[in-house]
Picture (spheres, rainbow, N blue to C red):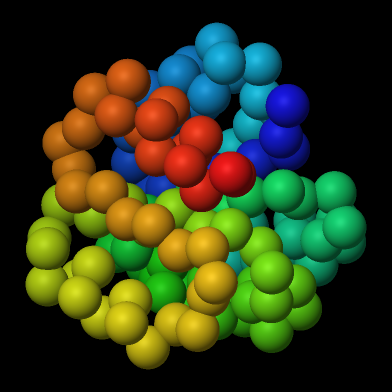
Length: 120
């Protein structure tokens, strides 16, 4: 299964996504924001198979995080999560080959299926 880096400033969402993905056999490293996620990624880029990130986070939002990560690992699949559809529209600027998005709220099954699609 995959090593997944998860970044979200909402503890309830982090817990929901972590539970869903670990139940599918993935290893999930949980971070509380974009800055923490990028620090983790910087030292372990080769080990990360997928980034799952909220778009709206303080300091370093999910789109800025995705841009920084893609500069280091352009082939990395990314799942963007947001409660605001206009934020997901901003993702068009990212030049990711494997970029998918999901609107909050979502179910455990929806996030599991989207991760499977992103990793395929």
